[in-house]
Image (cartoon, rainbow, N blue to C red; front, side, top):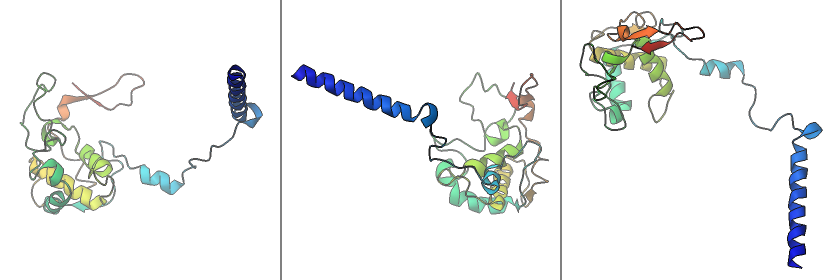
Length: 196
């Protein structure tokens, strides 16, 4: 009796699986699974915020180091430290690293800061705009992002106090580490910078 019951249950389960499988194959395959939707042009525009090294994609707006200092204290210092010194082990040092040419590959303890490692000033704006603050990424306005970028560039000695940073002036800043990066000119490459 027990054996007959096990066989009957096995056949019932197999029949259910076959029926469920048939629902997703052949003529019964659903065209939609009821999730997702085609994005509207406004939804695509909201996500299409990349900024190129030459500044293409930068929005209208502006900010100064002084405005950025206030925003930094309110939104960034809790993770990156009062002066951008970082909060080990999770939050990196942003400013104040050693200056000059370094072999980051042979000495992993050298902090990679905005002033000694980042190849383009526009990358700073793009990253802040997309990913910061950690608790609310993408929540900063263009003016706030320009101001934070100005503050951090000022702290690294790359932008004078009182200067206004905007879509025209940001790409003009020559980052000290730019020469450490070379274009990837292999066929099929996206052409992004690679570390030497």
